Length: 391
Image (tube, rainbow, N blue to C red; front, side):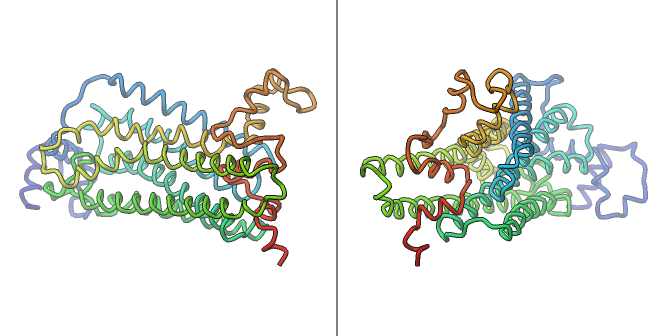
């Protein structure tokens, strides 16, 4: 098979001259004929000369992702209030989403007819960039869930020494993402073995695609388990706050509000990523040419990218402090007074909340908000676990 594969490459690129690279394991990485061969074999060798309307829409979404996440990053950087461990994780999530939007934008611009002008090494860089940043976004969600679990369930509030844990989680998320993304370029690909190729990603092996789906499914399951434990811990321990509440109904509303926030977090993630997971599973199990939907992968990947547009809203803008910081950053003159107070016209922007858990009139203001945004403080832990801390 290797001999016939090399013969086909030579037939498709008869004018190519021998070079020192041809004796190297990665010699085909510099031959653009490999791209045409693999795309022709998998049935994806059909392009238009111009950008498709949906591609233009995806470009606009990617631009919004970059701008939105850049604003959030700038707000975190300029406000010392956010220079705390949990916001480092939120900033890491925001950075990975920003890079995901940017790399997918480049992916779109280098796709279509431009694909056939790429060498395999450039193709791996194009796809690997999107893969790494999207992986970092997913794993960052797991890192946030781990930190919330440690803080809320294990009752370990932040101290200066805990920053090592934050940077450890951030570093681990990027190391794992980069490791997964570079496996194909390091040799786990189907160059020289067309039968093993993925239809969705014609230079990746189907086994590699299945491996990644298994990893991401495990990450999703871990996130679900951790959030369920966090909610259970908060619901159990809010019963100890009866003296600070005016009624049992208010306590129930708080728990329901927290459940809604967690449901939104998990629901949006699953809604955006599950279709792509299912499509990649079909890519593994479907015989070549039997599942035409695999050729529509751009729509599924675009939906997954859309999650990067929603993450800052769900994880950051539900925080009243963050909304105030963004108002101050974007429209200080029109919505803020000279002394930093919010004008009446800016109050609707400040008070809006997806989870509706921020009720200033209540004594436990910010309890559920801190759970949804990750801004856990020692005072919050003390309120949640008064008896255990006394002992």
